[in-house]
Length: 223
Image 1 (spheres, one colour):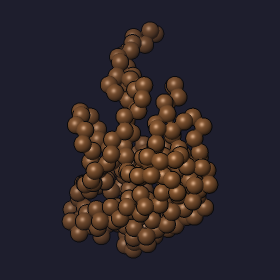
Image 2 (cartoon, rainbow, N blue to C red):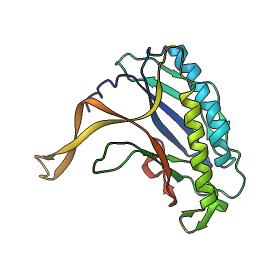
Image 3 (cartoon, rainbow, N blue to C red):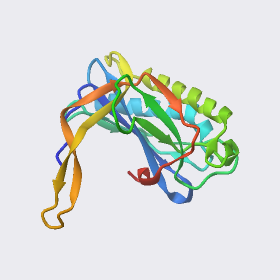
Image 4 (cartoon, rainbow, N blue to C red):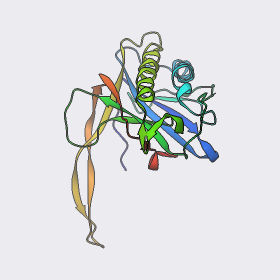
């Protein structure tokens, strides 16, 4: 696979988790800045600020045996952009009865651009059985809480930019556009290979929506 092209003004944030029974998962999202690229020291401080925001806003949604591990951040502006990890971890504070590892609450990211295909979203390891009102359906009170808490989390992340970061926003980064059908010369089977953009397309996330249907991490565990 070829290296992904630089994404100017973009920092990738990764939040790993330890779930029940020692399984793991992670969340990734992107922020866009208009000012000076961060140093490794800037990003280390930023990672701990993201972790603190998680503890304040998202820990109350997550069962008490779910642990947020140290946050990582990577400046994607160049191939040599700064990389750093934080130093703090936190544990969920929600009581109740947990679901099996992989059960998730889906937060959709709204962007202005319209296109066919999957839309940006994140799968949070949040919620307990008491938050469910029917098989596979979250209760309205819980959905509202997630919407409020996720918005507060992102606001705190945006407010934690380093000196000189300029305007910081939550963004989505698209690296691929369409695909090319390629035939295997041995098996003669066809495979759709995504077409890599020359320059990533960055969309500002304008709002959020929380799905009432329960989601699953599935392949997002350990990736």
